[in-house]
Length: 449
Image (cartoon, rainbow, N blue to C red; front, side):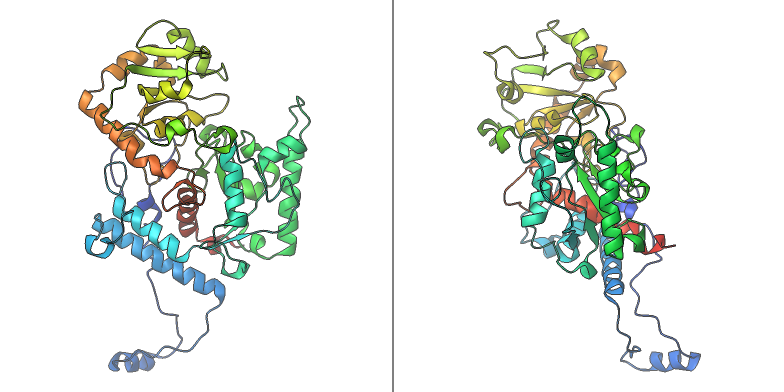
């Protein structure tokens, strides 16, 4: 089921929520019974359906619940409208062009709240497991781990038999800090740690072997997260990898992996300047803005063509001391977000926080939450080869479309907010929803040998 034909797409296969719910072969069924034709005729003659009494296993009950969820989401996908009478008391209902199909997304989110259970493995010791960085560049990695460890009461279960997915709560950022030898560029210790961790849980519990890891997930914002996952081939190929470094040219698979937004909170807190961004119609005197170091191949190319060359294009390597980074973002119409060494950039989320339209300059990057969000409705993506024409391309966008893009940024802002405690539809729940979507599509029972 295709929702739209957007002009801006993440690279790789289209991956929309509706496309996850395409099979009609798993319609909700009663438990199958064995019996003769006469038995079935007898059932049909009675007004009360008498089912053969058969106790379902916990695993069967989980799969039956997921079948109901799929049917419910499929129904919403066909309807394509949010049933106002049913949801009239819910102020969180997603509405607008920024969503591929608001009704499908909402129904899926409600089903997640109703059913989704995560088991967090207790194996492993601090600081590499059960902990992570909660401030600065890898904020999202530590915050998610901490929330799953100490919060998330609605979603966490202590009974692994009731879980839909299993979380391996190790931190790749802390692996780099504690077991990597600086400047060695040898990431073998990270792979060994992941390999050993999978060996422990697969030996102690039946769940990994039951599905070859398909209902397990890891989360990492460090650039080396994908490389660490190579420590176990099943994790790399089968498991759900939630990664900031969502680069399809380096093995990221949007059909099973999740793109994690990179969020950098200096000191662990959102700058007070970004708490209440200006409205879409506020004056923004700067046309486009970027400031950042020469990391990776794209930024030098950007600075070569635009640093100090045009007053409309406020492009710096490092801001002068009398200039403020967030003030520039709050006063700019477009915020340039080039990749560094890897595809993700915290500037995308910073731009959204600022109400500034992100201009994504990246190759092979799968954008976060693109299974439900239409990034073309609140951002601009420019091929890196067209950076010399950047001002021309942005100037050609009609003013009315610019206004709608800015309005879209304001709408999606809540989906990238890192709240403590988390709130409905914020970034923590959006990450969980992305995992939930892949789980209901995975049917891990089919992966058994």
